[in-house]
Length: 223
Image 1 (tube, rainbow, N blue to C red):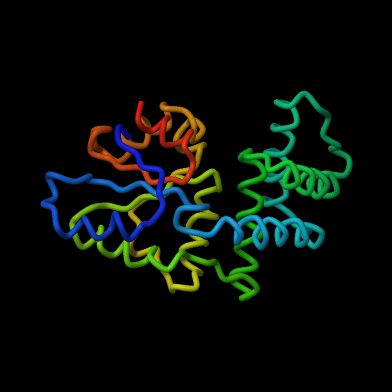
Image 2: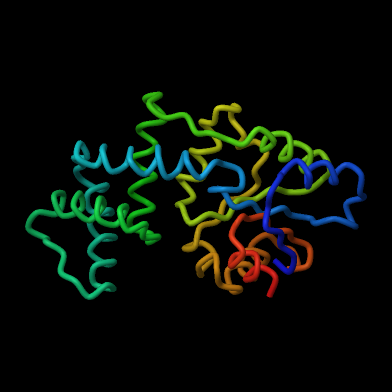
């Protein structure tokens, strides 16, 4: 994305949308989640502790166990540390709590968190929080002919859940696409990620606007 904005108020941007012809504004509005559409406190104080607590009850079998174990083992190999293959469930539980405490943004952890959160949402133990102007802004952009997409360090599964089970209702009908660092092939602080997202969306970088509360991400999107 060649344009970005460190976001303070989604409504300020949303209210611009109906007043401009489509060709004068962005074709796609790409949104960060934590701190942009959703309070940081919900992620830090509710989602992360929920995953850390429920991992103790995680007892998968078959394909899920194989998939998760393979991801964690691969990450440990990348980190240059051993993974206890003799007790994979216990090892995944231990690493999950350790990586959450360190706020590691690795795919293995993010994918497993998405699995754990899905159960919480479906059992109605979790309801995500949105800023008051988030649904209004999304609706205004879509009404103005713009596409809304999400780019977060959380897995695409987790992104869909947070908007589907929100305290403002199901917001997923407003969202055209979801991207995480794996899909973008780079972190949110690398310019390459935004080039890849623009390519995936079929637009020029200059046709996208990225909204975030992190300066480093905004700078990367502007390169």
